[in-house]
Image 1: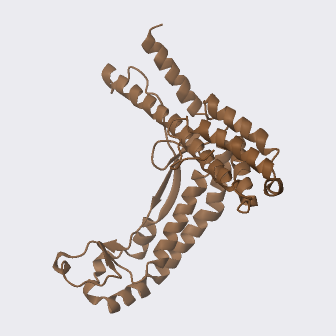
Image 2: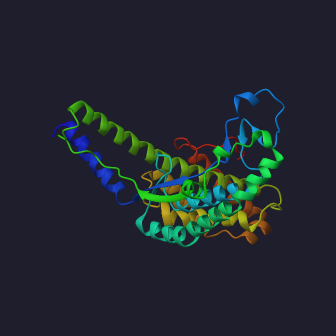
Length: 304
């Protein structure tokens, strides 16, 4: 078997492993309630409250901002249960996790989103009237969508994202193009695996650094959240990340951390200076090891 055939088979296996997950493309639509400032008004004294690079079309954008906030929270609902993927707004998620997330999106975020859009639509006439009265020079009625158009501009939806190796010999691909497509897929998978390691490694590093720094002195800055943060990482590792990172060093660090945290309680850390110093030393060594992973680093030095 040629080296190229072996490479293609390995790539097929990697894509097949990826397809054990769902790839979900989260999409959203929005009306910014803003527009370019007319040329004839450029250079004039403009009201700073509504002109900041572009011109606002409403006297108060709270209702519009509320919808944007809901869209962000709906997206985070999906992101929080997903693994890194190097395409913007595409989330890699386990099928069983997606069922939970989709239920929350359908039963909570989507109805709330549509409700807030209705509130905006119901208040648009009054908002336009207030804007026209307050800023008559900047009121341009042609820039405001009607109710139907306004409602259609706001949406959240999630659809499957296809990621597959093209079949060799497809009429639209010559050999060179086919090879280019394979290289792109390989690069995407490489980036995905690197992103996963980087995200998990830096998340753990930040939590360990917090525990390490609070084990100094008499432990007066220690509190339950410090230890809870580490335990939540272990829970998320078990629930979402374990088996997704093919890095022996990180797996060993998490295994060691699990053993050490089984001995740790916030009361013991606070009341026992010798134990606190011991934990600080062990955590410091984990931090050192974590920082040998690619793209995992603290922005400040650790005093061991």
